Amino acid sequence: MKPSPPTNNTRHDSTSAVFELCLNMGDSALILAQQNSKWCGHAPILEEDIAFANIALDLIGQARFWLDLAGKIEADAGLSSVKGERNTRDADALAYGRDAIEFRNHLITERPHPDFAHALMRQFLFDCWHEARLGGLCQSAHNAIALIAQKSLVEVRYHLERSRNLIIRLGDGSEESHERMQSALDALWPYFGGVFEDSAGDQVLAEGKVAPLPSTHESKVRGALEADFKAAALSLPQSEHWQRGARQGHHGEHFGLILAEMQFLERAYPGLEW
Amino acid sequence: MSNPWPLWEVFIRAQFGQAHRHVGSLHAPDAKTAINHARDVYTRRNEGLSIWVVEAEKIIASQPSDKGPYFDPSQNKIYRHPDFYDIPDEVEKI
Image (cartoon, rainbow over all chains, first blue to last red; front, top):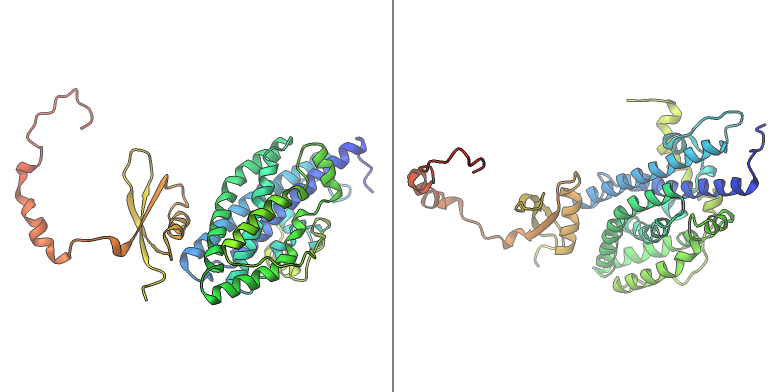
């Protein structure tokens, strides 16, 4: 069994919390990128096909930064879950070598997308949260986190501009496009609010000025959403029953299939290169 | 009913001081979406600083059948080219 870290508990808690934050940001970007990449070659028009692929690539780039940082923090602090070894996990090892319960992506990212409306609505909800969260992290006292957030925010501002433009046009478009966007919103809404859930580690991060509490983003994001949905002629669902637990590694039934597809090659042929 | 997804021509300016250059076309339902599509389709590899889009049907073009009367007469008027000046050696770029 691995001996306890020699450093004091406060530092250890803080390091674990930073590690968890990096996983939350990195895994959310990674899983959404994996989902969006499924539209490559299938989006209703060529221009949107390319746009979705671009966004997927942006998010994979961001996931790489977050997960590499997570791996470095883990190695520096001796947090590695692989007992008896001081091995460093890079972004690839974290993306392809973990099981579902170790992933910290927000539940909204793993929801299925039976039609393009679901994919767009999911992207819009995620972008609204993502922009607010990255904006908060830009001020982080943790230098590497602030740098990744600043770099990512430039990309995410465009993601949000695009997805907002589309949901307003389609929500306030034809009868069919309105119905599809409203159905997507109704289906996805219960899985969105978990992004504002504070975990135990978040208190430590807020005290250390590493990251604001996730709950502090709720009023601003909700205000922006309400204005945009009004412009899109969409009604915000009344239900406030949020599906929670993403930060503890709880996932829906679809998540296993996403991982199975994403991790297949590395699982079948470990260390494969081409 | 007019086409809900008309064709747009896209012009990109790559550097300050240069003119916008035609790079291609795309389909979009409105001007804002056309700009976004142009950004996604034509500036992925750091090509641009500025984008213009214009609905293709708004462009008035010369007809291929006008090629003769329009362009042929200028082929043999060499006096229209400023080729008969001596350029001093000190002038490097002209």
